[in-house]
Image 1 (tube, rainbow, N blue to C red):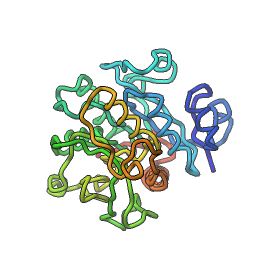
Image 2 (spheres, one colour):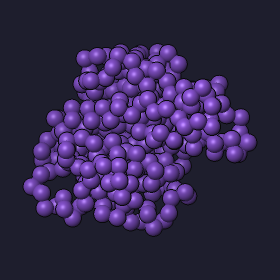
Image 3 (cartoon, one colour):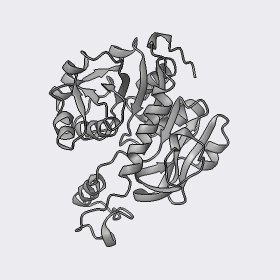
Image 4 (cartoon, rainbow, N blue to C red):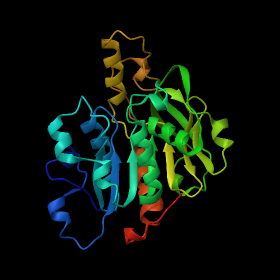
Length: 309
């Protein structure tokens, strides 16, 4: 197993080491005669450290060496992340816009009830998504970012749900020949936590997009562009075992009318520890993306990357 390469003092380093995830400090990595995959993570979540650890856990559990560059928006500064953490470990888009990356991951964000144009960093995000078509070989957009990318690239809109899609839902693979779905069971579980949706009918009417997995309850889960350069994941395969529980108790504490996450707590009893039923397929999703959509396809010399998508 080859590690994810991250800064020596990033908080995730200690957490992942304790979990027996193979990580390599940058100091050690620069002495290896291997070109690691360069993966940028645009982290739009308010819980920056938690989210970066979740993603690094999945990226670090593959046979590929990965060098991660953490990005934040310049047009909006997160209020819940320590300023020292952001200044130490994060770059802005302007600092990397002349660079090229094998892969890009854009996280979700708690802004889904706003129109896209009302989001403070919408113009900056559009620049990043356009830049990715030329400077990144394959991009993965998660939850709200998937909705944002589908809207920006294809004009597919999102719709507000009558109640929050919240819990663990059963999905089925709809394109078994896809390399991204290799090794997946015919049906599998994945977490969702969102107030809006994209509709399968809207996606299927657009030429150049295909749905790879969906759910009767949660709708479209994974879609991709025909050239596999853009992957859209509407849920949160990266979530920890207690992420939905923390969201639930947070909202209950605020006095909000929130339902117990579906199919999560045994017997829907929040006093019991949740049952994890999505972790294996989360690792498989990220491993397949890194291997088949990034490593197997990206040029060794990134200066040759001239994807216009």
